[in-house]
Image (cartoon, rainbow, N blue to C red; front, side, top):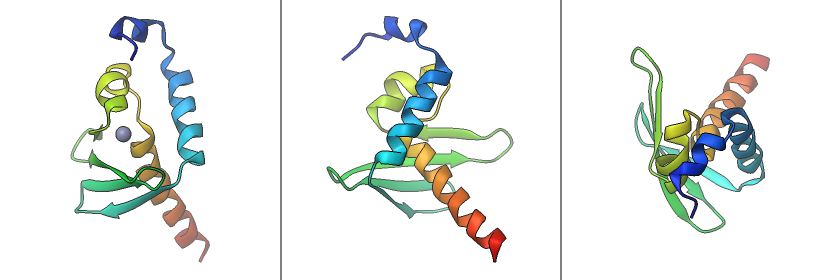
Length: 99
Ligand SMILES: [Zn+2]
């Protein structure tokens, strides 16, 4: 476990890209709980994460995974679970645009 002191040396853009690449290689699934809460499951270890995306006014993202709590939240980036929810929505809307 790294200390928070390392965060100041991290480039948010690099960290965001790293999480995006990691998300694309992960085996995730998603259940929509309601308008703002999403249950993301990692099928590799069956861990569940609660992602909240609030779109009232300014968009706010949160996730209850340790990476988001300890790093992403402070760096102002999205963890791979949040990225997955976004990616899933985008994939869905891309399909509907093509029809
Ligand atoms: Zn997360």
